Image 1 (cartoon, helix red, strand yellow):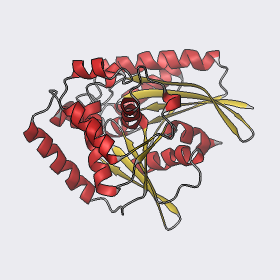
Image 2 (cartoon, rainbow, N blue to C red):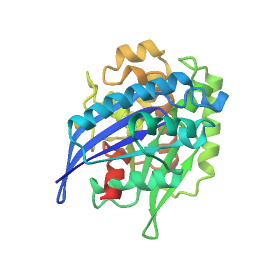
Image 3 (cartoon, rainbow, N blue to C red):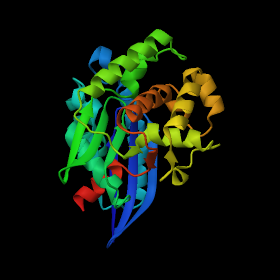
Length: 299
C-alpha cells in the first residue's frame, strides 16, 4: 500500500488529491479545491499578480499540512496554462520549491490532455467515440481517440480569459455575447475534430453544471459522477445564467462555489457552444480528471 498526493496549480483553481493505492485499488482519501484565480489579469499584465500568488501560497499551506498529517509517501505537482504563459512563472516555481519543497512540472497543453485522459478513462471503461472536454481558467483541452491513439488538442480559451473579455459585467450585453460566440466558433473551426457520440465533461465548469442541473443545495461531488445532461438542459441552464448577475448566481445556485460565480456563466456559455459543435448526445460528467491521471501516470 502506498499513499500518494497530486496537486494541480491551475489557472483558476489550486487542487489537491490524496489517494491510497493498494494493488489495483485506487481509494480517494481527500480531494480539495480552492479558487485561487492565478490567471486573473494575466492577459493584461503578462504576469501572475501578487494577490494571486498569496492565494496560491495560502492553499498550498493547507495542502502541505494535510499531506504531512496523512503520511503521504510521494507528492506530484503540476502547473498548466498560467505557468506556461506568465513572465514571472520561473520565480513563482522557485519560491514554491523553497517554501513548500514541491517540485513543479509545467505541462504542455498536449501533456495536460493526455494526463487528464488517464484519469478519466481509468474510471470510465469501455467508452468509445469519446471527446473529453476540460475547460480550465486559461485554456480548454480536447482529448479523443484516433486510429487507436489518444490525441490532445488545446484551445487558448478558458473561463477566466472569457470572463475578463466578454463577461466582466454580469449580465453581459448581447453584442458582447455575439462577439464571444463568433470568436469561440472561429477557434473551434480550427480544431480538426470529428463529431463524437460521447462527450465527457471534467473539472469545475462541468461539475458546476451538473450541480445546477441536480439543484444541489450544497456541492456534493460524489453525486455528480456519471450524470448525463442533454443539450436542451444545458441550453436552459445557460439561458438562466445569462440573465443573472454575480450576487444572483450565488443566491440561486447553492451548489456552486461562490468564488466560481464570476466565471461559471462564461464556462457554461463555452460548453454549450462546444456541445452544439461536436455532438447532439448528452454530456457525461466525470469527477475524475488530471489529479487521478497524474498519479496513474507515475504508478
